[in-house]
Image (cartoon, rainbow, N blue to C red; front, side, top):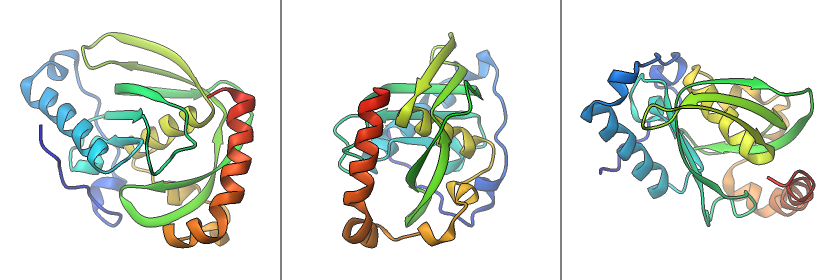
Length: 191
C-alpha cells in the first residue's frame, strides 16, 4: 500500500464526474491496489472518507471509515466501507446543518445542509450489491463522498459564505458550540 498525494481544489479532476466501472474492472489488481492506497491515504490524513478523484483517478469509487479520528471525535464510528458506483437517494426531507471540511480543501470549513437519512446502493470491494440506509453524520459522510464522485465540493453546498472558517478559527471560536449542537443531534439520531 502507498499513501497517494491528495489533489487540491482548483485541479480540474475534482470538477469532473467520475466514471462507473464494471464488476470485472473492479476485480483487477490495478483497481484493487487503488482501493488499498485510498484506504491508506485516508487513514494517514485522518480523513473520514476519500473519493478516487481526490487521488487523481476518475473511477467511481470512494471509501469511508471513522474510528478514533482526532479530526472528528464527535463522529460515530463507521466501519471501513468501500463503495463502488454508489447511487444515493434521500429517504425523507429532514436535513441537518453540518460544519464540514475536506482533505482537498485544506484549512477551510463551512456549514452545509445534508439529508439526515439516505439510501445508498453500491458494489462493495468484492463486487457484491449493497443497499443500505445511512443516518446522521454517517449519512453526511456518504453524501460528501458521493458529491466528490459527481464533481462537486462541499464549497458548492455552503449557502452562507459567512460560515467559512479556517481550522484554527473554527477551533477557537466555533468548535464548542458546534460540538454541543451536533452531539445532541447524534444522541437523538443514534448515528
